[in-house]
Amino acid sequence: MVNHSSPADFLLLGFSEHPGLERILFVLVLASYLMTLVGNTLIILLSMLEPRLHSPMYFFLSNLSFLDLCFTTSCVPQMLVNLWGPNKTISFLGCSVQLFIFLSLGTTECVLLTVMAFDRYVAVCQPLHYTTIIHPRLCRQLAAVAWVIGLVESVVQTPPTLRLPFCSHRQVDDFVCEVPALIRLSCGDTSYNEIQMTVASIFILVVPLSLILISYGAIARAVLRINSATAWRKALGTCSSHLTVVTLFYSSVMAIYLQPKNPYAQKRGKFFGLFYAVGTPSLNPLIYTLRNKEIKRAFRRLLGKDVDSRES
Image 1 (spheres, one colour):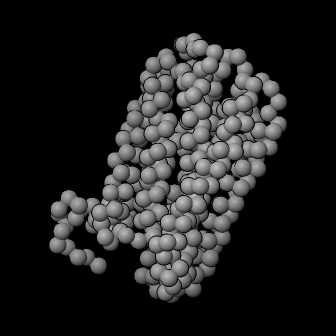
Image 2 (cartoon, rainbow, N blue to C red):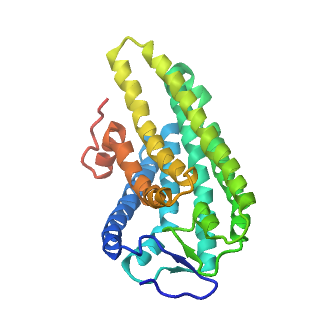
Image 3 (cartoon, rainbow, N blue to C red):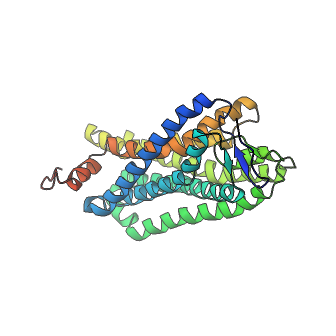
């Protein structure tokens, strides 16, 4: 049973109609959150402490790891409380903060993944000019642009969403305070908010994804001209991790923000939303480290097991 709340509170329903499923999800979410904390913190530390990782790719990767830490911490503790017991309440302030952070960091990740695709494009297609083009100052500027765009998007979209006339039951049919779920909660005219969300989806999702696909199209053409098997493997290793992360991220985000209006799509959107908020941040460190020899060697040196080794 879901408890009652004050008029200013929201109720995050999640899967409250399936208590048994919520207990299973509690364990999975907790395990994923711990993986997120350990994996992303490790990547940040290695990128800072290991001189061999002081390169643009790892600078952007450490930004992505920091973003994932902030992203999950903004919602997972509240989610765990809601999954464990009957208390599904979140205050209006808590919902507002969660919405603001979600919009800001989600937008930042879209732009950051585009920047990382550009970095991989230059590394594969312009290798001789890579250090000249992707210099430290440009890296800092591109990262700053990603964070600022995320902040601006959240400042623009959060207030109109929170000013909606919400229904008196204030039951958010989701795990977190997301724009689509809050629009569905409104009992008034949501035309402006839906138009705003559509326009934002085009600029924040479709445009960055198009730029990523264009970058990888150019990379694919460059790789097809390579006759060396070794160069093929190197190019594949350079891009495969990022391409996997892009696929996971955009498939889940687009399932949330571009879903049709029907009960089945909304139910499915809950699972995608859960994966977006919890799954991708925990998988990103694994994806970037499993096949990355540089990170593995840096980790061994950090543990003191490979201090004198200088593998090529």
